[in-house]
Image (cartoon, rainbow, N blue to C red; front, side):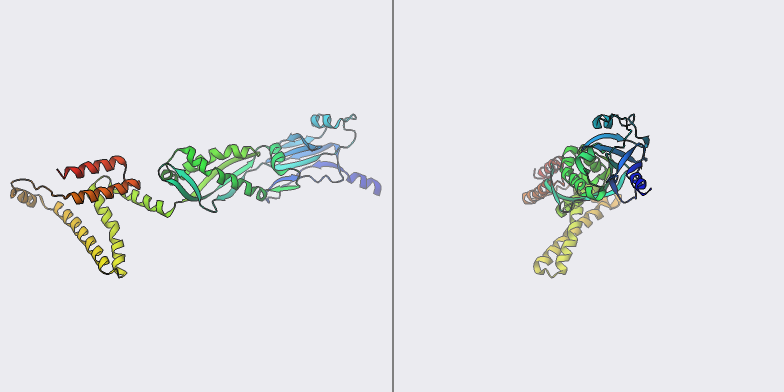
Length: 349
């Protein structure tokens, strides 16, 4: 009886895999010193795939279901093994199970800033992070390219490879989108779509299907963040030069105040005085615009001819230089700059 019990233990009647939820992607059925009994049962659960490997070659792939292993269910293996007894004897083959369920909330990110090319700003260094999900799409390809003959292959084993693919394709994704960097950074959904388009074929090369990818944050360099803030401010005031000067003055006053509070001496006092004069001029203009119609009419009646603003060439050139700097930084467009230039040059006539 002891001999018969020992022999029975060498025959496998049921082949199945119950996942433990530990992130295992591939699991090799223990076949050491054992053989599959003719007519044995193979159970493949939903979200699983079973792969039979014979003499180092993938012989058959089974999707979810229950199978009885006979010559009808394993014709390829029968041919490879050249059995002449129609499975009257046990046979030996390697069986691998693969989890095809979705692996969610996988993290990706740029450990160091990466350099990309942008049509507006040239070379830009950015950092970004997000998450993605994937599943095994082609078990045979994944076995031959990635997991191989290992007893267990987990999500953690694949993590570094997939992160590398994400980082490698960020630059190509931004370039192929054709969207300016500032607009792309503000639209993370569009960024993610462009990145997914680049990654899907790369993942497929190793038997992985990318389900989705998200971009949760894009960190801009400090210099670009300042330009973006100025661009947002300009968008709020529009093309009105008066409002633009008010905006610039409001931006400058805190810096002047910091210089004065820090003991800037004569230079700081002068800058603070200049800011005060500029602010006084802005307030005076706003006050003049708020005069009642009667007072404004009386002031107009006392003048025989409309007053002509006197602008010195030096002031015009200084203003043009400042506008040119704003255009170079991308705060003003070429059209806006040209319009302001024509307006200023008319004042010299």
